Image (spheres, rainbow, N blue to C red):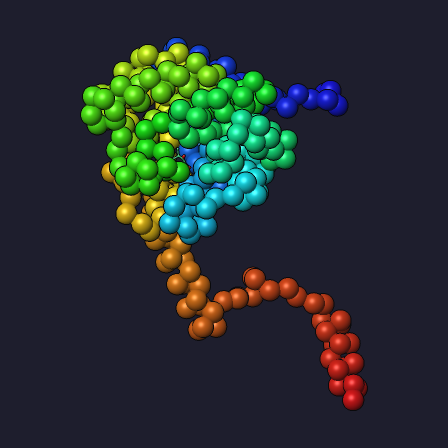
Length: 291
Ligand code: KIV
């Protein structure tokens, strides 16, 4: 085997996403924030892993995504890329990392690729984001767009609520998605958008749409790891489907551990290390002679 094996070895080729859309094959995307979630996502066969700035809420305990920093997202992305080999790993550009200028956006996108091994980045919004997306793609970093409910601007949008629910707002959303495609985005996340509008956007775009609360007609779906697995305590949005209750399972396991420790049931012999009898005798003799 070549010493200089390609980095793409085993990696899903990005253009394959267009093929999946053409063939009508749905794309599965999930968020991940560390090595085990990256590895499990890979083993489960997802195509796309997003290191979302949702980490600010579900991992770091903030009440919005706004406080997420580049350094935090870089650290999490590094861990995920060590675990997720075949899926494309997309790093979410945190608030402040692309708002200031195109140059800043490119520099931060490049950091995700060079320092954390990301395959692509995602950035929220349209309008000023268009030139950022274009600059990032122009610098050779694949970019994913995100329209509809964009949590980094939740305050301006009036909270965490569905978008595009009037004809005028739906028209703007439709135009924004087309403009992001024209700017070079390889896929667009549609978040909390009426299914009928998401369906029209999906028909209009060459690149895949990835829906979250945007109905079944999108080319793919994304869910947040903690929502999907029942690890997040807050009120889940209506678009969340919970596939497991790991939070409850973890709590019950820890309660059993605490009880075992307190009652002396853990550790048992199988959890401890032995020492040969003669070594123990010698040690005891040394201890007895010690003043
Ligand atoms: O940060 C995130 O997890 C996201 C997804 C909800 C698309 O942006």
